Each structure stands twice: as structure tokens, then as C-alpha cells.
Image (cartoon, rainbow over all chains, first blue to last red; front, side, top):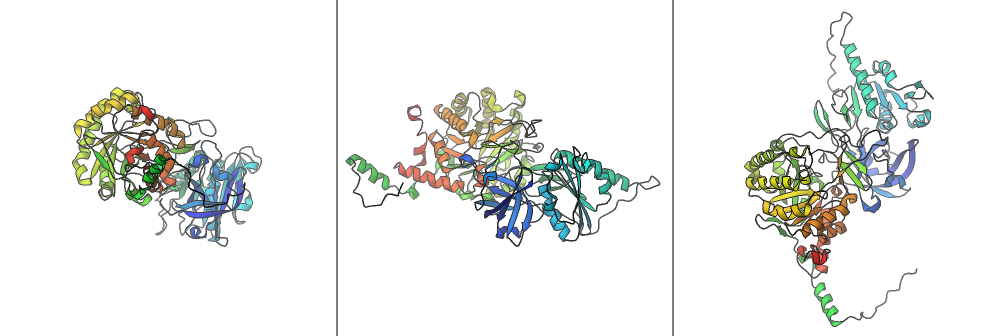
Length: 283
Length: 344
């Protein structure tokens, strides 16, 4: 349905963080089309033969190995799905790419990524691609405690990683919301991925930044800065995850309302203009 | 255990009667089995195959043709449409649950006129019959909706209208139409007065007074009863601080609903009313055969199509083989085979 299923052989099982499983599949015919922001649908029968199309964000593409690494998202019901029990060498159906790539403006030289444990998988590929393109990347990573953090080795060395933990076991004690004000003025563009609270914090910080931008020392609003031609991406994009669905934009299961209209995450998403979305599913 | 050596064994001893039966069965070529069914008598709905795509999973029409081969389908039911636009609610709208999935799309649609404008051309060119699933929260609204649809239904080649009795009803404080047989029959009666097209009434396994509804709906004007709707479900989120779905209550699909759906189909079939489209958790050809055996005259496929777009073709092939194996030539020979004397 939609894209044709491709056989993917499982090459490796890893963890992006404790309990967050990543699967690397050999799928040379698929990887050329994959970009940061894309997801794949993984299809494997659950017990009883039931098959669903489970959304898995692409967290890394290895052109030399002809492989793609995707992250298993936690299920809403807390259940352990059949994908977590895959063994090396097993083959499942992969369908993709699902969604659209994250848009990065040509003029962007400083990219701010904001993520929690669940969001990390969605932005990892972007961090790798952006640094390869010579863009300075700072990652604001949030976690409950140091043990929940993704290993720094999963990101390129040149990425600046700033950590906030709720218990203060490493980095800033608190949340990334406390740090955003400093970093949004540094960045040319930002992308946030994760739960509603972190998306909301990022959106608020960006809206405050805009207000500050538009007010001159005299107190009169300044003229709004316009992006150069060819630079049309929203300043802050939020990556919205969804679990399962039809993958062709037909079922309505992943539709979110934004100021720009309805966005079907499997077709027009997962990135939406964070300051334009209008639902709990938005930022 | 070592594999048994294959030898040219002597023909098994069978009685002459059994041999005759075997010969008769062997003479039926599955390809000659007629899958076409005509549902209803007053306003008959003819389907080239007894395979229905349920309203919802494949959308309003434009996307369906790229998702599955509609030539393998007898009836495509367009995702529910209403007189005015309906908002689908907040995310998450769709989550996995043990044994299936749960959705709360709230019959989101941009309104009948816009759906017809955007998707009508795909219905006209579809290689199967097309039905519109109508969502209304009051009798008056349904009458207006049918009037709106009827203006263009012939031009668009609409074969039938489905009345969604699993949709919320204002008069029942937002409860489903199917929760009151009286209200459901009143809605059906109104629909019958507004159209001469074949009418399908969709209920779920949770419908109240299902047997009564099945037997009386035909007098109220229904031609086909679709026992394929989704029952309600609820699941807390992982932290148990709220519901997994933003809407709270959702609708269930997948294997977890299948036994209850089969029970409802069997109950409706025993009501000796309208012919039944049976659905709910059908994920394989074997599931489809079970649904026929429970009393359905056609099967409705839903979310299983997302991961298995070849399912309609597989179901069709399986039905042919099953009919041929019984020495019959019509798919209706499979209907109610598991109901025994209750159904005869």
C-alpha cells in the first residue's frame, strides 16, 4: 500500500538509550530515498497473524552497508511488540519513506535540536546530515536522569550536546526549557522532537524570541525579518510522532490541525510549523 | 519423525457413494464459482464479489485505488461523510492495543459537498460498486444529507447508501444510534423515505437488541445489515495519568473484536431479516470463511488492508476454493454453514 514493501534483513539490534531499541536493516534499494525526518513502516505479524504498519523513525542511514537504522517507538499500551523479539538475520517488510524530510534552509549555519528520550531517534539522522553539510549543531537533550540519556557516541563529535536532567545527575538540573532562551538567540533554525511538554517549551521560547526581535530600543515594533528566497522552512519545526496507520493519508489517524490547515503526518509530516499547530498533537 | 516415504499407495477404500461425491466435487473448477451476490430484494444491491471495503481505513476514494486492487472488491464504502464538516479530534487518534488497535477519528470529514467535489471522480471510475457512509446526529440532519447526496448520486454512480448507526446521536446524549433500536429504526425509516437507493445499516457487535434490529430493520426499509462496526474501547496511557487516545474512548479494530463480531453476525443472521455484511477483525481468508459460516452474505475488510493490500484477492480465491470443495457453484452456499439447524 502506498510504497511497495521491501524486504529488510535485520543486521543488528542496538539501543538508542536504555530500553529504546534500534534495529538496523539491510535494505539497499530503500536507503537512497531516505532523508532526515522520514520514517519507515515495519510490518511483521503479531501473535495470531495480525499485521499492522508500525511507524519507526529513521535514525541513521549507512550507505556503505546499504542499511538503515530505525527506532522502535514505545507502544501506547505499554506492550512489547513482536518487532522487539526479532533475531539477527530475520527478514521483515519495510515500507517507505513515510512522510517528508525536515526542511533546512540554505542559509542556516546554526541548527538547534531539542529532544527528549523519545524524540532523540527523530533528530539523530538530522544531526548527522547537518554536520556533514558543515552546519553547526547544538543538541539540547532532556532526560529524567543520566542513565536515561542516549550515549554521546551516537552523535557526530562536532555536535555540541547540552544536557538537562530532572535529578541533576548530569548537566543542568531541570529541563531544557530553562536553557532555551540562551540557545534560540544563537540558532538560525530549530527542530524539536519529543513529548508535548518539551514541544510546548520550545514553542514558547521561540514566540518570546520573536516578540523580542520585533521590538526596538525605542519600543516601536521593528520590521519583520523576511527569509531570503529559497528559505521557506519554518524557524521551529516540531516532529510529531504517531504509532500506526495506513501510510497513505487516507485513514485520518495521524491528522493534526495547524493554522495552515490539516496535516497528515504520514504524508505531509512529521515536521510541522511548531508555532502554527493548534492541537495537543502539535507543539 | 522421519518423513514418510511416498509410494504409489492403493486407492483408499471408500464406499461407492463417497466415490461419487468425490468425483462430483472434483468436477467443480474453482474458477467457475460465481462470487457475485445480490443483497436485498426490494432495492437489490448486486456485488460482483462478496467483498466489501469498510468505511474509513482507505479514505474517501482518491487514495484507495493506489492502496489495493479495487477489481478484487465488490463494494467500496467511502469513509463517513456528514452534512457539515466534522473535526476529528486531537492526537493521538490511533494507538495499538493488545490484539488490535483503537482509533478515535470521530468521522472527520470536510462535509459532503467537499468530499464529493474532491473524490467524486474516483467513485465514477471505480471498477467496483461504491457506497457512501452517511453520518448524522439527528433524523433531520440525515434527511438533509441524503437530499444533498441524491442530487449528484446518479452522476457519480453511487450504488448504495450506508447509514452509520455507530455514529453518535444527539437524542441519545451523544450515545450511538445502535444503543436504541427504536431510535435506529426511526433513522432508517427516515432514510428510506428519502431515497430509492439500496440502504445498508451499519451496526457493531455492541448494538442493543440486535436480533430485533435485524428482523425489524427490513420492514423499516433496510436492504442490507452490515454487522461490521467497531465497538468502544478504552486504554490508559503508559503512565496511567490519562487515556491513551486524546479522545478517551475509542473504537476497536483487529483480531480482538473478531469473536464478538462473529457472535453478533450469528445473532443477526438468526433474526432472519436482511442479508448481512459481516466484518470485524478479518485479517485472513480463513477469517473471512468464518464470517460466512456465521451467517454473512458478504465480508467487510478494514484495517487489515493497511498491511495486507492483497487480502481482497486472497479472500476471493479462498471463497472460490471453499465453494468448489463443497461441490457448489455459488458463494452463498457458504452462508451460515456453522449455524446448523438454527439457520435453516
